[in-house]
Image: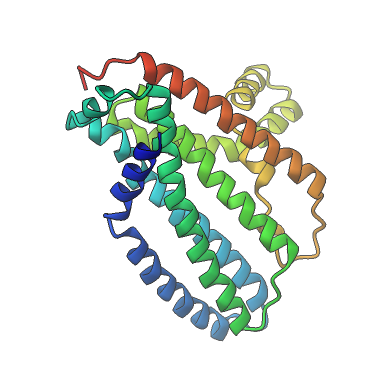
Length: 254
């Protein structure tokens, strides 16, 4: 599994994405400077919103546009078969792919978060507990989204992977709101659909506390912790399913 992990890491690292991350972070600091000049006393809330949103969006883009290549591109180029002939189980192959790309996510996330924290210190903004927990929520969102994308790499054509992953992201943030609306409106069909969404898709809204940072809103970290455990359990479950399908699928018709 370790050689697969290293190969996946170098495969993404060669794409020079970390250099792009540094460039984007430089642009982020310039944006924060501009917002500081235009915010009229509301810079603290704006900085938190922009920083966390930027952190999430950039890593979702990393997952969508580079993550799917570690399986689907190798399947198309038939280089995946070079791994199959090795004395490595397919479960270890998919686990190595996941851990290899996740290590890239960890490095990229840490570098970008460091840029954001440094910019906050420059503008004398406090690094609150809510901000740190919101950052953890963002990272778990990105990780579970990569787990979902890896699942789609195994079961869907390459052209549908990005759209399907984005759909999961949107539904994961809105499924419980949809269920509440269905219950309030007494719509049986919509309620059934919402319950299916709640069961199948991850509850990303449970770990989304970005909007509370910089506000007097009190966050129940116990509930947040339960949400984190739920996301980790979902990630484990979809990883097991992905490994099971990957171990039995033939890629001859890709």
